[in-house]
Amino acid sequence: MTLDEARRYVLERARRRGIQAEVLGLRDRELTLRAHGGRLEQLTRATQAGVGIRVVVRERVGYAYSEHLSPEALDWVLQEAEENAALQHEAVGFLPEGTDLGEWGRLGQSFDASMERKQQATLDMEAGLRADPRTHRVPAAIYTEREREVSLGSTEGAAGRYRTGVAGIGATVVMREGDSIKQSADMDWSVRFDALDPGRTSLRLVERTARLLDARPLRTGRYVAYFEPKAFAQLLWAFWPLWSGKAVVEGKSRLVGRLGERIASELVTLVDDPTLPEGLASRPFDAEGTSARPVVLVERGVLCSYLTNSQTAHALEHPNTGHASRGYRGVLGVAPTNLYVKPADGLRRERGVVVTELMGVHAGANPITGEFSVQGLGLWVDGGEVVHAVEDFAIAGDFLALLERVGAVGTDLDWWFAGTAFGAPTVEVGDLSFAGGE
Image 1: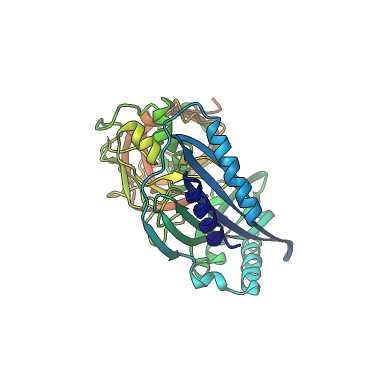
Image 2 (image 1 turned 120 degrees about the vertical axis):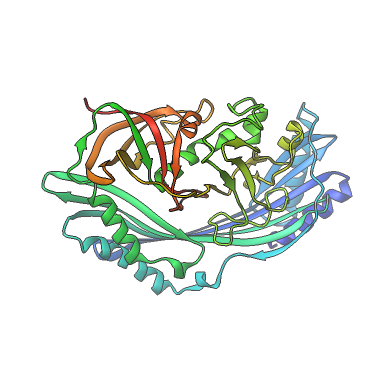
């Protein structure tokens, strides 16, 4: 059976049994090419598919999944979900009312580029890095593409399907000048293969890494920080759960009960938009069939919304923002799509530290308390000019307090992709604590 056929089969059986059911079918395809030493050394293809079933029986929720789409397997998985629901003590579950969501194809024809073009792009990425005499090693140059097919339906009327995908090219490079060695990595992503440019990406990675050579230790102190876009996007990646409706319901967010309060500088507007035409994580509807729409989480510093699915929205008496998320093996959760800080009028770098790289962000960040302590690399600027690179420092603080001290926001929006897309322009933060070498 196809995913759509499996969906219709399970829903028909569920209706016969008089139970509410939701069927989420997913097929993920991934291709990765790796170049090393001027030749392709690895090609990896992977495909994973299955259906996840959520049922509600007497307000109790049960889940089960199958990667086999035969009638026998689907009959078994429906029964398994029903039995799992009977084991639940909490009787508060429901499925949202659904609509016909249609069919969407966000996977452009540019993904049909030949394998030869994708291989050449990977080799060009590595060659571009090796062209610079300061390049010491290129541990990896990679092209990767990820395609997802989604089929969703429910006994409550939801029915829809879509395909989406992203492609990325990037590398890790080690550069050396004298005794100074620096390693850096970067990836450029797009929903269109033709939009990737290995020459542009390799040149930028060389420039980003080379500027960090001959770095000096940073003296401990409090400085103005200028977070470059991808560095600030990594902080968003670590702390987006503060806006999760699930975390709010469970009391695991410091934003509980603060809707309408000022939580950030008035220069901060935070948006999640699953409808961006070129968005890396755009989708027409969420994992429950709620249609996608832009959601402003923070507007000019004021907390406006959480990210919710139907259950968290009901528990919070808050609008459902359409951010239900789950894999076919998982249970219902909440997740952002294209989460970004809205660009503003721009900023001027005067005196302080340009934070170019953050390391170990997830290990050094607590999304419940908002506290963080992470290692970084950067540039010391004075009078608007780069004086030298700085290293051996850690940034520590509180993410919400950091948002309150945002003094300027740039126009240079850029994205960092980790399954979800996080975007930011350059962000200036005043009086941030840096722990350095002295």
